[in-house]
Image (cartoon, one colour):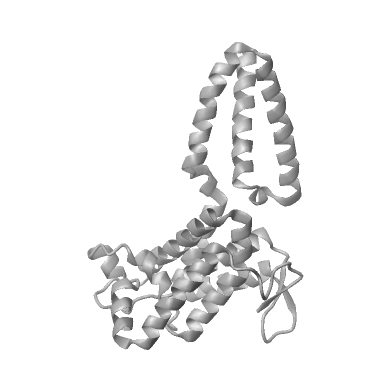
Length: 281
């Protein structure tokens, strides 16, 4: 699989989080591959088993299972897709947000996998980063829906939104397939669901954003009573910035706003509402 009409492709620079996750997965897989005893130990202690998480409180498995893989092809495909789609997202979002999103999708995939698989002792553990990878692909499709890729061996360019949509459909219908194929489709689907919820609604629950809103409200109450020139300049500033952000939303959509722009939009809207209310009173 490679990019068509994208400024990234083979040879794209390794961003910090992508590089470190590739390195960690590679080292752990070498340990699994070279020593069957270590492989068994890691799989049954750090692979995802619903019974262990629920009844033995091994909640770390919701994160650690993402760093284990069942074979060379398994880890190669996961890490290759992660590099292809993850690098540009990290460059756009920043490493902190990207890493948080990666774990949210992986843990979300693990939770759905636990819900939909038998929670009995010694059930084969789920391993692999596919839940997180599916979340990464979803985010890429939502941010760059019309980018084109070519999926080997088919020579026809496919828009990312159609490719990811097709893969999500496979994950959805395969999750409810009573005849298992050894693939954790529920984890794939869970990663997509967790990623979608975070991208659509996660900004509403960001603690730093809520803190800034409350702080700005406290400053607003002091400013409204003064009726100062500074207050009028701030009103004009927020109105100008909000108009610019609304124009950007009309052009590229809300998801293309940065975290700072979303905070500014929320803070400015609240400020103007409170200001108009104070003037009315």
